[in-house]
Image (cartoon, rainbow, N blue to C red):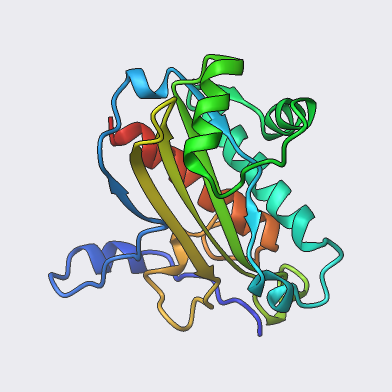
Length: 214
């Protein structure tokens, strides 16, 4: 399935039309109580690989655990790029392992308490990954596009109070399906993305959403 380049001037024509379809948002998010103080230092927990992730990892070289680890690192990097002080997922794993306890990937209260006590974190971010399918073929032609799905919640530390939530659920669509939606992708819709590129794009959009929600 080759991608088709957007004709020059097509987007300008669209802007001039009142019935022009709007590009879909990159992430679906909801802000509850994010403030500048809550983003002083954010601890990013290693994400949880949901059981259905195994079924979606179609022929990929990464295990479910490695996929979840990779996406949590993308989110940590995206937050740091926004100027937020970040506690890396690996540091949190080390803290829980050193205390002789399992890493509470789904327990916001336990994660927030430890992140605040050990690292002085003002918030902790938890995530769950449920889909990861890499493209078949190359960047110019693919019989199966990449598809990635994960969700995140930000919690105040040490209280565990929910501050923000986000969901990234994306299967790359060809430009022929919606000519005005494709340019939102990295590369302007002119190439097929890998699952990693798709996931990083979602992480960057989520980080921007957290900051804009202050």
